[in-house]
Length: 393
Image (cartoon, rainbow, N blue to C red; front, side, top):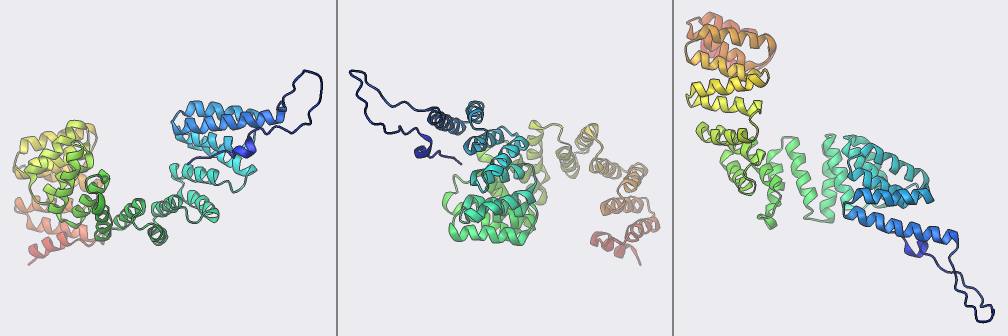
């Protein structure tokens, strides 16, 4: 966004004067103080906005501050100060500059745009939407603003309005990447994974080699959600070729191999994440699960303990309880699972594992009681129901 000064208004125009014959002395027109101020403002404003383009925000602020010393309500300087402060991440201070500009220059498009962007950065999406809607009263064909409005509606989970605005952008510009990607995110947020996939794949039609890596990982994530894991692997591998340690690509590959029950392959990627982030509790637990399912129980215990050394984790304790059950330490596993149920009484998996412990101890009646205790909470769960059906005569 740039704010160009109208040079015809800001530059000094010498006043015409009649020649006065005073002998050999030559007189040239000299700007008066008011004209000189306008000239100074024009030059400072041009410099300030050039500095903004070059990301020299401190120099830009110095220029705009000098303008405000001359004219405290100058709209170019107030917007410039807002833009520079916003670039530095000072969104609340930037809001004050934009509001000050709008109080003296209502409807200034640049101030409205900057103000809305600040509220978006502050996660105040409803306020941002109100301001962008004001902007659109003056310029209802601005695609940049329309996509921002659609994004903001998506953030506040207004599916209908968000989709309407994205589609309005595509009517104006059929291949607008921001609207296409936005529609992908919108459908993904509302668990419409096939529709999301169609929009993100559309981004690959003309620029497969240069498409943003986030499009590749988003397509991969759709395949993960749809459980078409082989399709997901293809796109995560494409992303990984570009960025060998991209977290989302590594996680996606590990989870896809996990979904295909290829736990050994998943371990390669869990461990690559841990090379970069050794204290990632969730990844440690996932890796522990993979070692457990490949029967590397000592490694599984090591990873679960590493997770617990960082912070308590239900799934790390659950993993240790399952290892104990596999190793025949049923009473130890039972005690751990009962403690977990006290903390998380609605987690169906804990009841299934606890019931299995009691079955392995030969106590079918208690296993049934454990599963019925879960059902008494009024929660329907197919896995619990199926196990009960098998146990009851």
